[in-house]
Image (tube, rainbow, N blue to C red; front, side, top):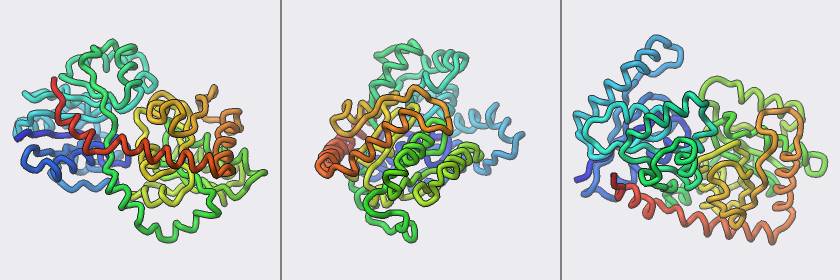
Length: 383
């Protein structure tokens, strides 16, 4: 029997964590006599619930305990992860995201060491960090990139061997997503009105650039003040970006139109009730929220950021893509990009035939990411 472990940093509401949890649960449910899969979590923090074998390294994680935090980063994580590897003697240990990838490589025992890159990495690191990643990832037995664009970035910017990198798209348990959409959302249903609800899901961070869609709604306010924007997600550390978004809402008097609803353990029930899904990120790897919205048949409006959206939407075949903004950083002022984003949203809402077309296209494309098909690619990874 094959023994696999997935390593993630925490159980916070991020895409990488969700993919690892979904794969782990799927292997243990569907490949019961062929595979055992453990989840190794570095920090016991976050909202996700995992049903299955789990090892927590830092059980009493606290951002405020600086001494303990330093201890774990210097020695604690490595020592405990290595002990888990020795005890369970895994065939493969697969890590997700930068910290987990680093520790997985540094604690090599006798397993296949596989790291998974979830973002367009060169846009997320400075030169010193790039050199470190380049040197470290060369030691991995295999690298899994979440999109073709991410693979090309690793080869071009980090000089990594293309033959060592395999592209595997994110997997989705479509039947579970479709069932979950039926759940009640209680009093939050009051936010949905007049079939003009726009939704976005993701961690509140600079990367997600939610300020763009808030200003897009502001640009439409005089013409249509009934459009509602719901943002699902919370900030990982502190409230700096959340406060910036709230100040924008205040500035443009959008209190009745834009709502920051925080993390939701079942985003599907919210997405299914919305009319359009919008992605405004500075960069992505493989945007989970957008893909899950397509599975639920929601028309997409996306900024053409690196990478993921154009690959998933096939350059506009499966959703509306607008050019990447010239202005990347946060600004209070409405930009030409914000206006174009708003116009694309409005066009979908005003043209039923166009809306129906992209609704069907989204459903069709969503089927390509069925977990049954993609899980096999993970099981068949060869180093």
